[in-house]
Image 1 (cartoon, one colour):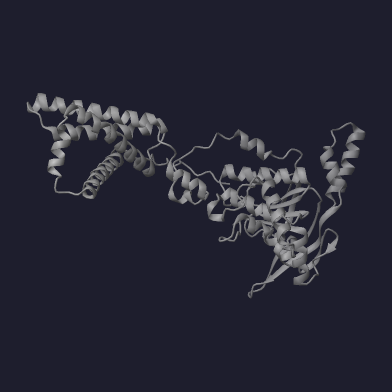
Image 2 (image 1 turned 90 degrees about the vertical axis):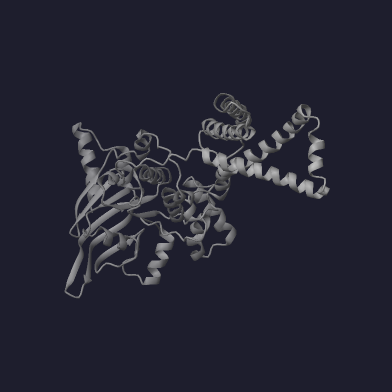
Length: 446
């Protein structure tokens, strides 16, 4: 199309008449050489019931460094246009030139070579290999090109760093979020240094925030690296981020509008409210790295204050049990004091631990808390009992006289293990359950 030349002429006339001219960036794009040229392109399909004309006499020029959005409803012909632009299909009539090459008439192998050398693809469904790492997925186009292994790794890591995923190269797709998977797909498209990126509904499976993150990245690649981007979408708010919007209807280009001030996706992203952090579900655990999963399971160190509050709970429980004996029963029942003491220490430790850490104690934390508390209190209570009842060791030895030393050690270990298990079970009983994530009123997706 002759729109760029007309814009330059209009700008010159506007300057002469004192009217505002088009921005210098648009002037630079207008003077850039064409990267994509469609001349009278028509595409027909034989459906069996007749010929379906998907594209009708399309003329289009996209210059280097442009960010173009191709918009249209389902069946408008935008996907057919994308297939031709991506050398996945050939026009029935007309010519398609990419970087000066007539690719419309090339063979399948010839078009495959052009795709590998000149075009990077970004798909709605990511199209990542599920059992390979992000780095290996990014390396794949270089494998087809025959690039040596070390060079492939270096270029793949550089591409991942360009999309801010340099620390996620060893993760598989199921360990990444949707936005991260799309960024891996963008890195895979960038690794061959193509002059053209074709993005087919790249935000179709993403929420609003993640969509803006992807669009911000595409804008940065277009602005800072000068990569030409053609984005297919049916959403007007996504197209608003492009500097040029081409609308397709019934196989024809019905409008071609240049936007002097496209929406800045980074600014829109910054204006969004901070994301709410909900409790992670089992499905979300798949997005965590192995190191993060281990750290999450361990839960970190148990603060000393939790041990101290557990002892306070023990004393409080013993006092309650003693008062119950004296006031209600009028007699001393030792097992009641012991029961209330153990219940008190477990209740206080579980609740205080939740308050101190900001989240419930993990299973691993409960095990460590029960084990160390039992060992420490047993080591402290033994001398206290001996101080209060000096004849207690002699009485115990009389009862255990028939046991050998190994049997006594095993019995002590059994008692300690029972106390650890009892405390763990009581801590689990009193530990509050994680608060379930709230259900959003509406899912905002783009």
